[in-house]
Length: 332
Image (cartoon, rainbow, N blue to C red; front, side, top):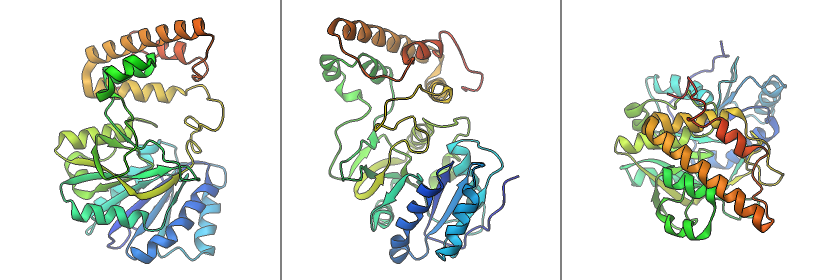
């Protein structure tokens, strides 16, 4: 059983950080939150260690003690690594079941640094817009360059466009492209990145917790889709700025190094998302369209002598993990 933590006293927002073998990043993230305590004195933070087994628990707890953060930071040491949704739920569940759960919860990656008032801006936005159930920050590089962090839902059209990667087709499918241009103003969107995502308590009460059937990736997309189906809006709030050191936890999306081979859990999560939300026929058509797109893209790249810089073995791995070849028993 995971090490238990005291349910935080009544607070305005509970911030949840899930650590897996990134104790130094987690500690730096906590340091950036010391500014938020000044503007949100009732804010509480729970760090969940997903069974890192690398000394993370000791190192993070020592930092909490040495920096005198114990009044607002708690640590849960899980005895298993159940993934991103599992780790967040481990902290959120007992607080939701307490006598005085906060109105807001914030999912925050350990590989983030929150700019001053980054969280307060989200809280203020939610207070002013009661129809909004979820909102996300502007994620950016250390030099301030914005990252894509507000997206459209995945669809058969977006998957085909992403696999083909051809300008004229992308223009025709513009309304379905996953990542539209980064907005400089508040705007409604389909889903936001789970690296900094605030969630209204009533959303959890309406649709439940994050789906632990996803180990990592697609869980925030699934959650935002369920919220959307329940009538909750999702917004992107660029005034809330958060530095995001992309891919430091998983290594999968780190754009600063050559791409790694996609782990099995990425393919499992992708298939689960489509089967669960769109059914077998739509998933099969989507996978088929993506495979055709990848095949045509590969032919074009060979003729042009270019490379798309895809992860190693990506095309063959994608085909092997398509619903045409392999239907994961955990996908629905």
